[in-house]
Length: 398
Image (cartoon, rainbow, N blue to C red; front, side, top):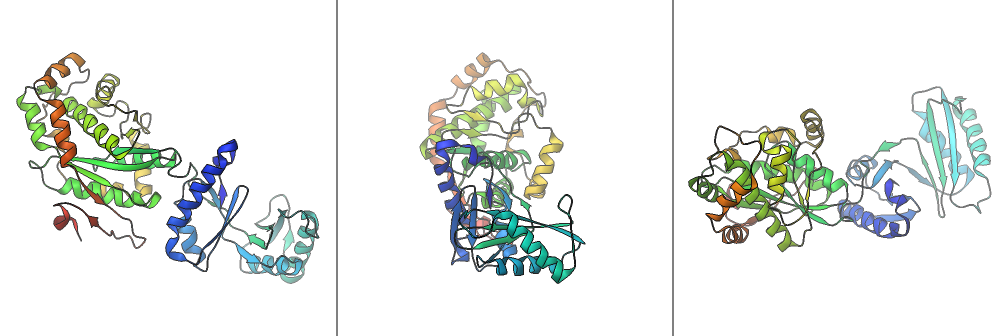
């Protein structure tokens, strides 16, 4: 594994490296015995597990830019030649190049001498031609302190920063297309995320909860141990409607969600909120309405998708595996009691007057206290392993 931007973090690099190692150990803990060896901007993972499985899992570790399935051999010229021949024997292509590098500068051969020696052995054994400018296949040899690494493949990682180095946040997840992508992007910048879903119960069914659960279970593979808080929001939505929200219903609901999410995040030690807002995508996401909604939050509101268009968000959701879940049928709590006429430029003073008709502080406290949580878990088999807490457990287990 080769690191990405964390190599640029100066004296703080050691903290980023330590977090990345912890994340790798968590992801591969069931593949023991496992040995991690770090050399500068490279982390060698030694395991008897199949290389394909190691690579598949390692691609979900943020902070890694390149992955190399590698042969580990003795630190001798003879072993280097044999490894290169093995790597090239069944590959397509008529030309090759040897790229050698020494981390152990005290070793007997220079990088150039090793490349020449191994290249001659490959020519003699396989009859391939040498092309140092544009070869069909490259063999990389890296001489380390204890052994020699040989590889051909350069598999792109996800890049970013290790999850956990940037703190913690609570992500509002609706079960739709946008919010899981926003959470993924926040994780990629090093944030560890918990999740909160606002359900329209008792006026809607549990389908939106199932969707939020399934989506968090899918993206849990990037951090592990994700927590999803479920807030039954329907009765409070009705109170807002009864108080005369009318065209302000959706914005008033979103402001209340911000208050509840802020209080929940503060209770859980998080320092920010994450939403899937995209500027101008719907009426509640105009610049004025975003500002009015954010004004109700007591923590910074991060919007990773604010400048993305829908097609970009959909492509990323498809890549993550959350898009099909988003398209499952479910009642959207945001449309409950909402006026057919959308307010695109909500006036803050009108919202404040509306909120004064309710005991907002008590409403928020009650919703936070009533929030139930589940622990969605991703399994490599593609199925989910629920570990549920609260009265939804009987409905959500599969």
